[in-house]
Length: 270
Ligand code: ATR
Image 1 (tube, rainbow, N blue to C red):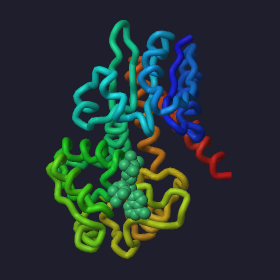
Image 2 (tube, helix red, strand yellow):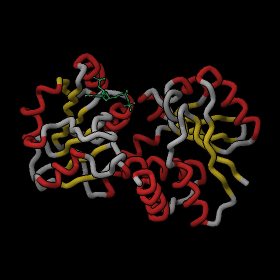
Image 3 (tube, rainbow, N blue to C red):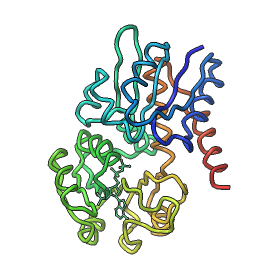
Image 4 (cartoon, rainbow, N blue to C red):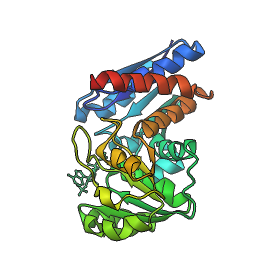
């Protein structure tokens, strides 16, 4: 049996096991996906131990995504972003990937959205924003980063060759935008939106990374304004799809993974 898993702290509410095991079932693979929660100062021994035990692959989440970099051979995307969320244990190599970036790209393309040449406003400048912004910059969008802490926006924007703003600039930026992305945690388990609803309009595609709830206050307001919406489960799904494909070399059963993820999210809510 091939063993895959997730390391993070905490990992209790992760939907990755449900999503990946649905893929194994669908394709009849003899594999399991388990979660591990090492203490932060045990990361190094956890990775060494996983390699020694013959574990095939690990997803990596908070707080380990940056620290794990010096234990893996990162691909170009992971090295550029400075974070790894997927590790593949191969013969004598431990390779690192960042499938959050692929997840953002594939979530957009699933909805027929091509960021190339588009005016894009991304709210947020944390780890998630870095992976998403990398994809947008690579795709050749005109990117504007707006963040509560302007210094963080400036740091990320200089990496991405984007413009940097504080949140008070949103009334100038959003009316001109074609794509709006919430890459902050605002709206998670709360009735708040990072962008005032009156700024939203029908020429926008609005993507949210928050998936609890799926219908965030931002997306509800976006729908009301006639915008196209992409909920937070899509990026979560496609980072898992990309990890599955790195590990197995097979095309992922996207529909089965999506059904399992969304039914898991439904259960979380009730
Ligand atoms: P992640 O790795 O999930 O992106 P992070 O690095 O902690 O997490 O980043 C969180 C993002 O959400 C940041 O852009 C943060 O803004 P600051 O850089 O100003 O902290 C943003 N964020 C979190 N809570 C917020 C709030 N109440 N209002 C506005 N932005 C918020």
